[in-house]
Length: 124
Image 1 (cartoon, rainbow, N blue to C red):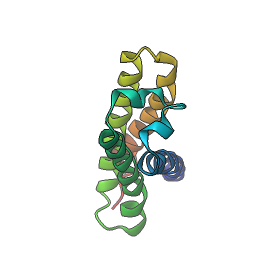
Image 2 (cartoon, one colour):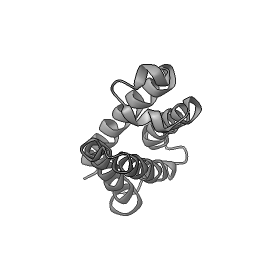
Image 3 (cartoon, rainbow, N blue to C red):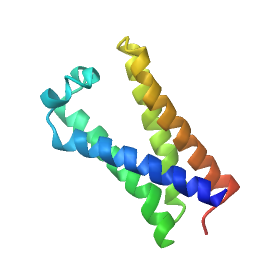
């Protein structure tokens, strides 16, 4: 089970790192053609979401890998689950319900990691 959770952590971290860096590095105008939801947010808010995704990605891997404050790994996963729930809710609110699917899948993966690392295979 530990290996499965590690694989999920790597997948979620890669997805969050990629998405977060894109939101940090590109302007809202550059993101808008593929991410219509950015119209509902300011440039600063989009960048803040990107920063949260990058910090979450780091939190999924670094504490678990180094053994330094490993409790931060399931906390990062739980925070990413909340972030993805907010993303899915935003898509539904903006009448982009089909676009909520990736956020829901990533959110479910984050919940699995949080539960796995809090209860099933805690890091020591």
